[in-house]
Structure formats: C-alpha cells, structure tokens
Length: 216
Image 1 (cartoon, rainbow, N blue to C red):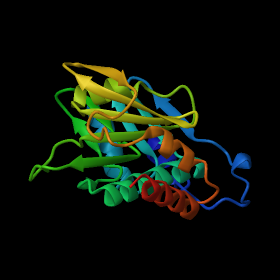
Image 2: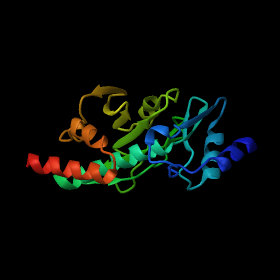
Image 3: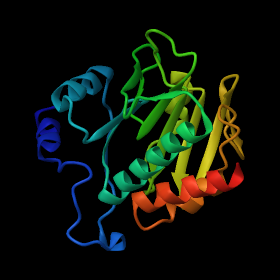
C-alpha cells in the first residue's frame, strides 16, 4: 500500500496545460491496474488521494484501476460538459452537474468516478447515484465501466469515444445500446458531435447556440 500511495503522490495533476497548442502531440491517458486488491485498499486510496482530481479510481472484482487523464481527455470532457449544460439552458431542461462524483457500493464491491455526471429533476434530497454518467474513452485496455455502473444502478451511461457519443440505458439489470438518450431524447448527438469538432470551447458553444437558434 505504501508503494501505491507514493504512485498517487507522484501522479501529475490532470488537465495540465500543454506545452503546445497542437492537441495531436499531447500524451494520452495513463492507466495502471492493480490485481488482488480488496475493498479496504480501494477506500484507503480514496482517502490518500483526498480531493485531488487525479488519479481517478475504479474498483471491480478485486481489480483497482488508477487512471491519470491526459490534457486531451480533460479537454474533451470539459467541452462536452459545457455543451450539454449550454444545451440544457437553451432548451429549458433542468439538470444539476455533479462532476466526478465518487459513486460506490460496499455491498456490490464496485466503485467509479465518471468524467462528468448529472442529476435530472426531480432530484432526490440525498441522491446515491447520478441519472447520467459520462465517460471519455481515449485509451484501450481499461476496466469494463458498464459492468461497474450496472452494479451501481446508474440509469444511463454515455461514452464519448472515437469522435461520437454512445448511449447505454439500464433496462432491468442490463444496459442496452441506444441511438439517443432515453432521459434526454431531445438532445441531437449529431449536433454535439459537430460542435465537439470546434477548435476551441468558445467556438463550440457559439456553434451550438447558433444551431439551436436556427432550429427555433
């Protein structure tokens, strides 16, 4: 455990500013998986990390994953969050953002920290899970996040991967792939994809607002 604690202490901060404006030259996410971990290891690492944004921790079936998001990863997740929140304001959808909320269940022995997550109205006084969890995927070989979220009973999981949004809705005890969000059916994934291609977040928001204005 001491060696793992040192790894966390030495982990660079997520989202550090790149040395160049060329996103293609930036390093990608760093993922480390530790086998034969138990629940106490997971909770101890959460305690050691504290309020730091990195590394993000996922736990399932005795495997503990530490993921240090790259600058590109955090750029994607922040841009997506800004677009979604702007969209909600423009179309009049009430939702609360909860960031990288640590969602966990000792009984299920599962724990995850989405890149972003949201609560939709009506919002419970003391919610135990978000309605929507969003994951940005830039590096292969990570844990099966759907299996983690399935056990945590998160109603909907979105993945931003390979330049597009993928939606999974929980039906019974399994996720089903959907072309659109069941919880936010008005959201056009093609519009979000187009705006995500903008060179800056400001331009992405501008394009979204222009498109929504043209539709009204």
